[in-house]
Image (cartoon, rainbow, N blue to C red; front, side, top):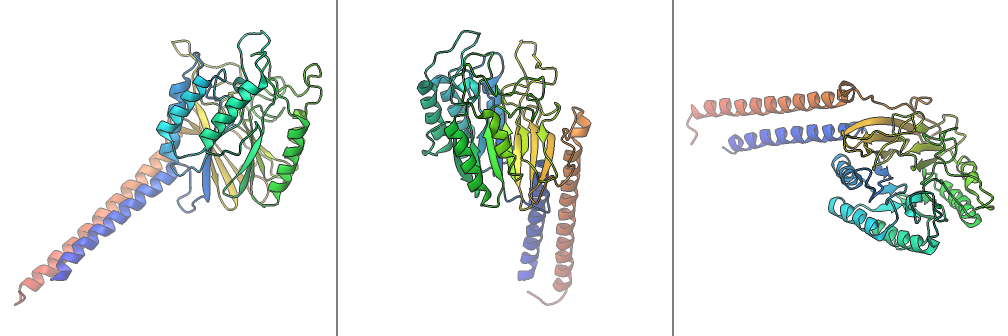
Length: 407
């Protein structure tokens, strides 16, 4: 008699397991992760939230971005932010930033790089005389609070994420005004960067570098004539600036990936990624922007209310032999960029192709979702068939035994 009860229970267990597997695979495929291979870990890179900017939807977009991260990759180990968390570097703007994060992702550490808007930024062309200590102390305070790392004591610092070095760089001068892309890297920071890269290389693991302003002539917005890289040399203001020398250091390490922001250039723009397959230099990623987007026409798109629109960010999946970086349109909930980097040298696939993986055509962006849905439906049907077959077997067996003298 025990078999009559245990077999239906077994049938239910089989169905539940199949359904669980289907949902799990569907979730991994939505995140762009192979069902056959799980990443060792993953993290996110975002930036340019511009908290407090009345010309865009900074608060709404930031909340949406964090909710997307929570939904698509709840396993994320950390969020790296490439700067311009605020629009003017005020305490109120930092507080709003912290409040939203604590409401959506309170347990995920978020590490800040400093942006030009975070460095005592003022609008217009008037000279900004905000003391360095004022914005520096505020940045350190909130960088510690957001990350839980009390060892942060400057705009440049490092930490380890799953064994890999994450090296944070930052300009050390007050932003003169909103018409300047001032970046000043002192001799001390430059020497520190060299030493950190050398130490990181000894781990034989990927090296991640974040900085607000992109190195000149690397990614979207910093290309010749676009003008959104930092000013490499300005002897009137910064005679001993080492910013222009940072790229030469990074390029000594092909296992290094440099993430930058500042330009707001969308993932659909020209050259959002620089990856080589000859093991000769670092890889470079434009992180787009959360607050609003810019494009190859050196402008953005305004809505009917006159506000700048758009919001994007990166999802980084680390495997034993490769790194997969995917760009996501947070507002439309779709993938718009994908790049794979081999950890054994160069790019594992599509070495010369850094174009967005998807277009604005909804049909193209929904192909993967349709495939995933079909797989889940098939698994559900299979579970139902198996459960029904076992149940029928139990009924037939019961009837046969019931025709005898069994009580």
